[in-house]
Image 1 (cartoon, helix red, strand yellow):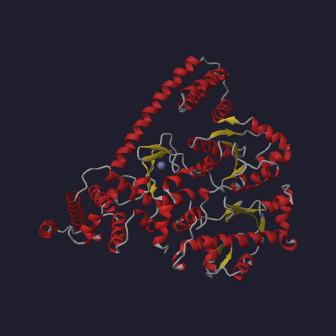
Image 2 (cartoon, helix red, strand yellow; image 1 turned 60 degrees about the vertical axis):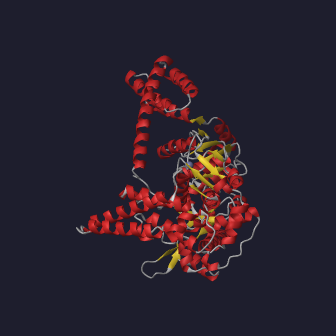
Image 3 (cartoon, rainbow, N blue to C red; image 1 turned 30 degrees about the vertical axis):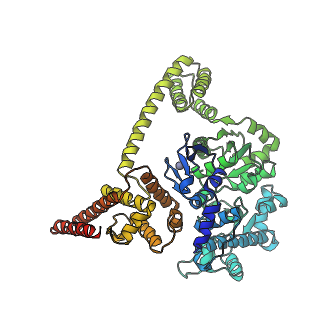
Length: 595
Ligand SMILES: [Zn+2]
């Protein structure tokens, strides 16, 4: 456990507005601050920081919590690591009372140590002529110098089931750890650990603070899978990291090059383009797009020139555009990827190509024009239809105007004709969007699709009573005391949803231990998404004026009667309804005799 005093110190010293300001541009709005949410894509700010309650909440995506929760989400850290991160930032040291209890922190650190040791091992193998020849041959055939190989810490995993495992065991790492860290697999027959990466050149993935967080391994021949990547481990989430960002972050303030493969990135860095990164064997995610937006203004997508690459580019264009980046796409001819292009034509030609990269619209327009034979009237109509669809989805009227002009000259159709088509299509899009929005609002209202509290949808009335109760006890000491003293009879078993029950138990435990209460102390026991929900309960309550004991009493009664009705439904008990009435009468009597 992290000592309570340390958390209190951090909450006090790491001012929430200061801390969040280094991630989000905040503007004062009354006593609070607002800005664009760093956790989802938005154009109008729904992210709010409340200095009074040392909390934040996004009314768009439901992210919320205290300064520790914020750092957990923004820096992709678990709870103990986020506490450590903030402690370093504000310059305090935490004395861990019980080292074993900080399991997550130890695990994460161990995974990094383990990976670093493995990376050294793979590199030694590569430079060992007896073991590493196949790997070295591969890198040489791709034109990599020793300097580049060393700079990226590249290595080689020999074709052996036990070489790495034995080395790691001799360094004091356990089999279980090696399996958790994804360096070893576990034999189903013998239960023993064996080397996961075999006969592969190894690419260590290093985060922006210099930790080796994972590995990608590529085969040397055509066998499958071509790339093997570490699965998500305690120190690593594929969707939140980029290959070579540790180097690119210092050279990409103007623009960044996004590639598909590790070899593309390495070839680009070696040729002097230090601003290249790649996703980790998966399609780009929204989180990666937001990470890129933190470091740069413009991204040039430089994917493979085959059809799969082009499809992936379309998807990337959309995600990167949504986070407000200026997105360009590179069109390569005569080579399948940037690595091959540079080897064939040299760095200067590639630099020239970068300068000619197309905007998303130009790129899509070219693809459409290439697809149709626009001298034939019916094909020209199809091309015009597709172009109008794309233009219609552009939010800025000025941009639409420019694109209509381009399309008009490319298709030789008057801009007036295109304009009326675009506007009609746009009205249709807006209608559809409104329909979707209202459907979503309706579903949210009924708790459909609630992934944080999955039980809520099963009994909307019970859940709403729970939200009232939790909002009240999270905010008011007197309500916690009323429940603790039995003045208002309520226990964990009365709760209908599992999340509600867990929040109730945690809050009452803090209260009963006579500890000062702050929702921030709940952070260790709930996921960041759940903390967001807890913050919402509190904020919803804060916006209401009726927060007295009668409201609490009413919600408790409602919850109990709903809970009993649910049990009747389950048990088909015909006397249950009678018992429910008796119980309510008893509760009422207790309440009157208590007050
Ligand atoms: Zn948000």
